[in-house]
Length: 292
Ligand code: GUN
Image (cartoon, rainbow, N blue to C red; front, side):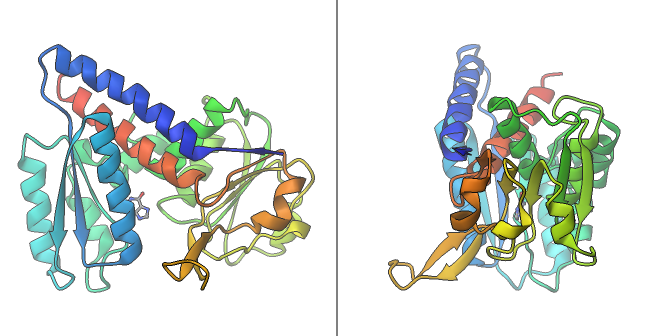
């Protein structure tokens, strides 16, 4: 069994990108700039945005955090987005999800200029991604592709089962892995809450991508020998031995499943850090597009 070490790989990718930024600066160009909008004070969202801002600093990318009150109206948020669309000093920006319940995320995503949509969530970018046209690929699936690439894990002809059909992870992941492209060409089954006999599906999988959001949901009896497991879940569970009072576990019961796998991502330290590296890659792409 080999651990897919997302943390170390993310550091490597960030170092590569830092070299690239250094070169732009040496050529007399301005630094790239990523902005993040955070609405309200969801503790997990604050942590994730913090990781993204810190990564920007490491790579030499300017960052700004727009911290908005949880009570902000949808109209005021969209006005802020329009301002950022029109601000030439910003190459790309994200709106950290989830949003408070009174705000419709679809309307918000539609308001983002697709050329600055470094999350790749706008329908224009989702559509391009689905058609295999070069664009911003959502950071979590993109990070997973980078992981497969760097660990030389091939997908062609393999049976992949993706668990969870979210717009952010499951749906784009299933499309990317089935494309006729590098790190595609897999036979993909997208499973969800209405899937009958998930265990039978999973037992056939060469690769499992778990993006359900339920702690340790995938157990030893659901995984075939030598399977490759990509665990996207980040679930907080109570742990009185920790200062914070909680610890993070994935959607896979790592402790009991890992010795059966050929490769598996840990939580934390697997997919999460690569999501950050992928977002930074998309930001560099947006920046470079401004010179075209
Ligand atoms: N919430 C969970 N994952 C993501 C992500 O990739 N981008 C944004 N903006 N919000 C998220």
